Length: 248
Image 1 (cartoon, one colour):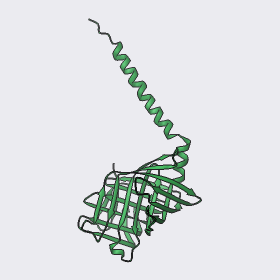
Image 2 (tube, one colour):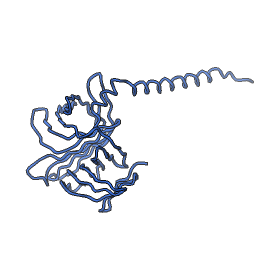
Image 3 (cartoon, helix red, strand yellow):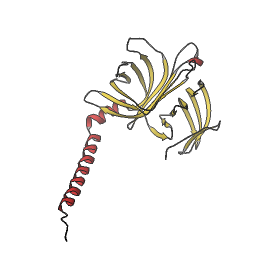
Image 4 (cartoon, helix red, strand yellow):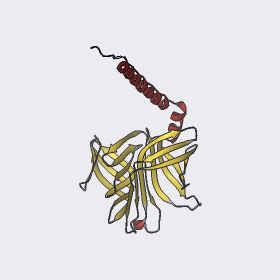
């Protein structure tokens, strides 16, 4: 007995048509001039010039922010009288432009906070969402964070973000505009830092501006130090034996 194959053929046709429509929609969104314009506005390497909480409290800090090709990285240590006990924060993950609202939406795959003076020096969250209003005037960028915090973060442009961003097994590494930004770790241990670097083949000298190592028992801050390292495209390896592997 012959089977009626028309329903099956119709289902296959509809599935193919739906998939084609979805891919076309994604491609159109990716080519949206307004999206691309906003992405170009925020793209680059930015140095903090200030941070204020929703009630206007100024919180001086030293840090950096990178937007590049749909990914962001951030690292900073707060400026306090006792640097050894200063808190730090680091974030990394994807972002998307929302031109209709003049904002970007950040998905922090890693939200790392440290407090050396606390009984819990390392705090980690693996998924936090942030809607951020963007204002750009010449080389000054202002980000206003929503979702109840309303923090105002201000920056000056360091560079256009020329270079590469690498996905690590436990984080991200940016090497752009002669700077490195490292955000690495989870709830058990974390390392974050930034600065400039000098490269000779696979050999690197990292001139650290700010750096924090933390685990469940302690958090240690560093500033203005030099670290010897190597990078072969597969791992950033430090002279102390630690290695941050690129995700394959």
